[in-house]
Every structure is written in C-alpha cells, then in structure tokens.
Image: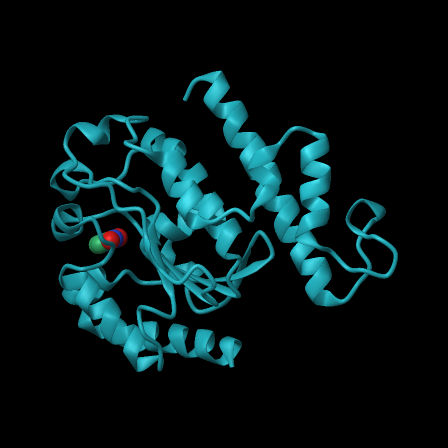
Length: 243
Ligand code: URA
C-alpha cells in the first residue's frame, strides 16, 4: 500500500470508529459530547453531516456500508494473490448481524463462486449455524484473506497485513455482538497472539470491545471429528451470549 492509500485507509477507519462511537452513545442513552448533540437531541446523522459538510467530507453524508468497503477494495491488486485468484471473496450475510464468523481464506470452491464457506468445510459451517438456530442470512461470514492462496497454502504474514484493514472495516461497520474466529489464523490475527487455538478456544476474548470466541475451523473438524464436541461447547456459549 502506498502512503496515499494508507492515509485514505486511516481516515476511513477514523470515520467508521467515530460513527460507531456516536451510535453506541446514542443507543446507550448517554449524552454525546457537544460535537454530536444539539440541545436535548441525541445524535442525528444530519448533525454529523453538517459537521462533515463544514469539513468538506462529503463521503460522511450517508452512513458507511459494507458496499462502500467493497467498492474501496475494488479489483484489488494490493498483494500477489490477485494473480492466481478467480474471484475475490469479500464476505456474505447481514450487515446488521449480531454474529460474525471469520475464517482463514477462500478455498477452491469459494474462489470459483466468489462466496465464503461454500465448499465442504462451508457445508459443515452451515450445519453448525443451523444447529445454533440461525441461518446464513442472519449472520455474516468472511475471512482474514479475501483471495485464495494457491493450493490452499497458509496465508503469508504480508498478505494478512495487506488484507486485514478491510476486515477491520467490515467488523467496524457491522459492529456485531459476538465474533467467532474459525481456526488458528483467524484467532491469532484478530487477537494478535501466538497462543495456539487449543488454548484460546472455550472462553470469550475481547476484540475491540466485542466478545470473540475462538474455535476450531470446520476443515479441522472434517479431519478430526472428535473435536466437534468442543466446537459445540463453544457455539453454545455464543448462543447463550446472544440470547
Ligand atoms: N476455509 C476458510 O477459512 N474460508 C472459506 O471461505 C472456506 C474455507
């Protein structure tokens, strides 16, 4: 990423964080600071807009959406994975989801279809979601990387670093109640840790104030069906949290 893109990224993040902060202040019923309050009126989008116009930031006039982030990603060529991908896999589901699943990277089927978790591991994830009493339409599913690493090799640190800002923005815009990190890469990336998934799973962690449950990746479950019991324990904790 060049310095102009980096600056644009940082600005975008500031705007999303500001918006989420204001919304959570409004929803909590607390008074917002003078900047976002007019008399007794809690935050109004128009008020941000007013401020935005003063600063010439027309992009702030409407709330940021996942579509905005997708547009910003464009025909991404920020790392080498664009050379071998068939489709970029941005993510799928409900922008207002209470629960977001974050996986590692698209596999063969996901690359072909441009959708996350649609191969064998994806079918198992769909079953897990169903067992939780949810549907894929109610939740959001995405990955650490938006493009398939050739031969499904592990993501490289520079690929994660390049792609992560877009995941961060997706999570900021959705602002779910719970994130479920599927597998080592998702858990380690979001929690910035090297602790293995076997030690991270089974309890909630915090990602930017959002409860994050790490659990085993469905692809791992396809090879180790004994771990299904632990995944079920983890998702039950998520279900309880979402009640
Ligand atoms: N594995 C992942 O981590 N993500 C997908 O989208 C598919 C398989």
